[in-house]
Image 1 (cartoon, rainbow, N blue to C red):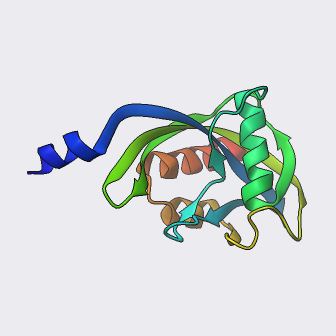
Image 2: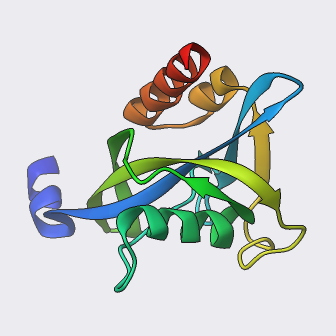
Length: 151
């Protein structure tokens, strides 16, 4: 029964997205920003679809501004990627692969495009890692903290 459901309602194609791992230093401690998703309210990083005329890292920075109201310096190289199942509606989902680019936050907007729909929260890397649902993203956050501390 599950296989029939998957064949009928779940796309087999994996779609690419780009995300920003937004971070800052606060009193010599690394902090990670997460936002709530519009659909479920769970914690996620800002992410979105490729856009014509934008490099992947530029698209990730644009999503950080639109979804989290965060502006900064973004790395041009992804530090990893993670997969997740994006629910389109009750009976359809698609698999997405998100390339993650670190963004050092230099400015926080008081109001932003999706500010009325999302909550932005700063937390320690450990809190951020335990707050996301995707295991691969959790590992990216923990590895970023480890690498950041040794840089």
